[in-house]
Length: 149
Length: 149
DNA sequence: TGCAAATAATTAGTATAACAATTACTTTTG
DNA sequence: CAAAAGTAATTGTTATACTAATTATTTGCA
Image (tube, rainbow over all chains, first blue to last red):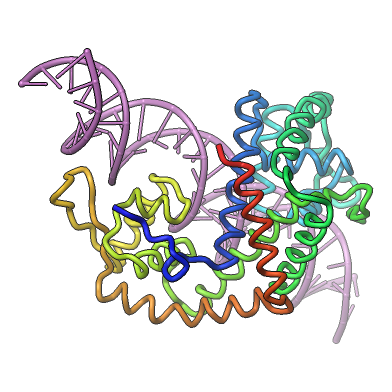
């Protein structure tokens, strides 16, 4: 059976294209990590990378920085701690909080995974010039701002 | 505490921007459906909309058309059938398949939800001209093609 | 100061998504 | 034609996401 794909019938809206591209990108990075036996997911990587930029953030700060919500960050940190890549250090100044810190193993994991991620990026941005990437960012950020709640 | 956002430290890569924009867009459409008490999720809507374009598709055809995988489509169809928006009709030509068909209620749901989705789209594409949207699609499709497995 | 409101983290429930494996059926091919 | 390969749908497991509710703690204000 033929699946209709003509412009008359296919859901050819930019939102659909945006959704499917983001999905495939995530999947591609996920598979790159899996086939290198990195032992972490791409979302766990995003948290590790943020801690690499600024170690000791609270879970809520991590949530804001990565645009994930609090319960999701709780569970990702649970997994990262179980793998001994991070530790929850009680914040003496505010006993509701933890400072999430990279362990030595976490730092080593970042060094291990970074080349994999960088290689996947070169595949993703292949055939795109700088101007195109800049324009993409501008347009995506406009959409992002349009949808501020 | 300050969350670092300068270009030196923030994960300012196009992939991150793509991911967060797609996530916010999905969230925005999801909330639009929820606050209108549509009773379906955005992913269920995507399947309904595809059936509106071409009714009676098999689950695998739906999966290909919407870029979802087969187990996900199975579960979405389970939910849509439970809500009496679709029915699984055995395919007499191939007894492994079902034809997924919209019920009258499903067709009514599409008419009910379409204005909500259209309104959300106008918000999302606000401040973007046609040329920008066209360029966005071109660039996203290039990335999509780059990541073909 | 004391109490209400806000905040940080967690837990529970539902939905989506990827992957692997299984079952049932169909097609290919030796 | 029968066995092997392929296909359609399902099931199970793990992970992410959103909502809502809960607990513990801190802040704000009367």
